[in-house]
Image (cartoon, rainbow, N blue to C red; front, top):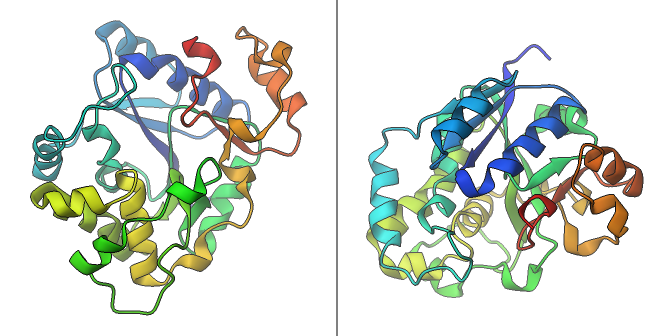
Length: 271
C-alpha cells in the first residue's frame, strides 16, 4: 500500500489488556502500526506498550473541543459500568483527525482482528468505510428531536443506517468533509444539552448524523462480520480460555468472522 496507513484507538488502565490483544491480533493478521491515545494508562503500562513494535502511544491532542466535551459530559448521569467515564466516548472523531496516518481505521480496543485487515483497508479505495450495529440495532437511531435541533437538508431515513462506531475507516484529505460532519454534533452537544441528550450512544449517534447528512449510507458494509458483537456467535468455552493460544483458538472457532467486538460484554481478559 503506497499511502501511510494505520489503526487508531484509545485506552486507559482498565482496558490495557485489550490494547495488547488488539495489537497482537493485528500483528498476526496483517501487520500495520497502531496509534493509541492515552486516556489514563499507568506509567508501567505506557512503557510496556511503547516497547512493542508498531504500537505508538500518544498524548491526547491539546484540543479545546475535547476539554469542552469533558466539561459538558460531567453534567450527565454516570454510566452503570464501574470505572467507565463518559467523555472519552464522545471524542473519537477528534482522535481520528489527530491520527498520524493518511489511511486510518478506528478500532475500539475491545476488538480483536481475526482476519481480513488488509482487505478492510483496501475498501478505503472507494470511500470511507462504516460498519453496521448488530448488538442492539433497535436502540441505535438518534432521537427525532436531534433533527429538529440539527436539521439535514437532504431526504433520508430517520432510523437508518444503524451503525456501530467501533470500526470506521477514513482517508485524510479525501474524507475531511465527512470527518467534519462527524465532529459537528459532538461539538454542538458540548454547548447544547438538548443536542447531547438527543444523540444516541455518544459519538456513534454523531457518526450516524454525519452519514445521513452527506448521503453516505452506501458506505456502510452490508455484512456484520467486519465488526461482529460477540453476543452473536457461539464460542466454545475452551476457545475463550485466556492464555497464549487465545487468538489461535478464536480464529479456528470462528472461520467466517473478520473482527470480533466485545461491545457491552466483559472480554475474557477482564474477567
